[in-house]
Length: 505
Image (cartoon, rainbow, N blue to C red; front, side, top):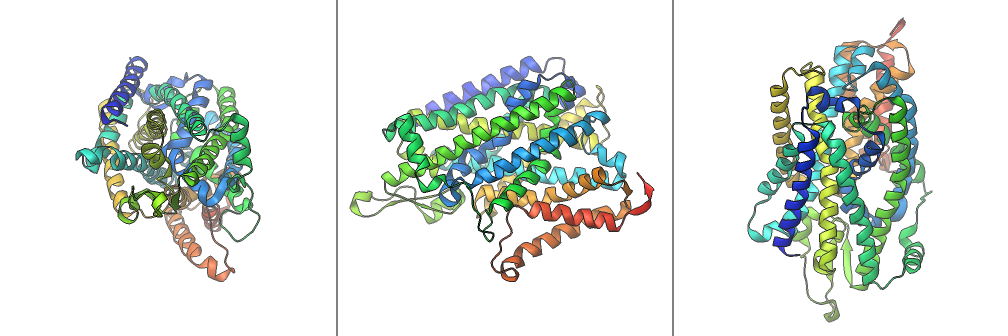
């Protein structure tokens, strides 16, 4: 695709976001930034949360991962649905009853200062790392396939990526994000649907031929019942359920949108519709992945299971013609962009970039807003009023700079599948939140506050060494994404052992 055409598309896209920001952020205050004045339409929140849940990682890595694990990712998605039901009927009523701006305020009311700050701290760490993962893969694709050819360094691409988010989110916060996410989710869904349509045409598939080709291929396998692999059904389902609970229900980023609804009834309605639509959307992404592999096989392309970060080092983007006996080679994470730029028509390139930009920014703009909200409310003691808005803006700038730094560090050390890295990190950092919230909700015991930080650290260390040793000790059993559940159980047990039996909270 012509760099000039890409520039025009990017300028038009971000101009639209800035216009939306200008309209929605007029007369905005801290209440607008933190909870959207609690007036967000539930259907816009539900629709926008689809884009926030998918992210740029899903847009690239999930289709690429189909070659390794086929459709088994749907096992996690089914777990997500169960997790969303728990969030809607357990956590949302709790948050609305307490009228929270930051969900971690619950830990202060239930336990005390140490638990409160520990929970908020783990959210900040988790969300910074998770957002950096998401933005990293997008910046890397743009750098590898577009900007690097014109001498633009990667660090400048990263700065530009974060700066654009800051420009349209710093004033209106969540009030603006609800509307920009709606805009971006539309382009994300158009991106995946039109990609499927265009690639089907390249393969000369009718609609029925498309369905038959995918369903009859090896890629359509959903369920894995062998107990040893990390993608066993029960491991994936339980991991998906608990990852959903911690990465949505215990995450200020995702819950901040729900707390901006008018009341608990609308917030629940939002959660029910969003969780149902998300199943269909993930089927679309996996179908796109299967279609990409079918297309790659027709072109004689070898796909290897390495990350896009190593693409140019170990496997050149273009080799000799396959007809001469030498095949093209590409990594799984890079399959979608590789085909877009080297084989498919320009129309697919336009769709790809619009979808990728929409996916990346829909999941990351709200994350930056949530980080600012959590730090201001949980550590600086902000209220929903107009005071100290200048300090809030400085915090917003600070987290923008922090994200730039983390992305640049990650670009130097990442050497595994990005989607697996994201969930592995989430298991270690969100696990303590699962243990804290579940202990507070299920029991009425009072913790010894000074022990809480130590318990969470010891749990993370125990989970790490457990993941290293299970394969040898348990006959080949590999710990998968269920590490988040193990982490939560250990924290729960530690809190129980150090809690008071007689004093009720």
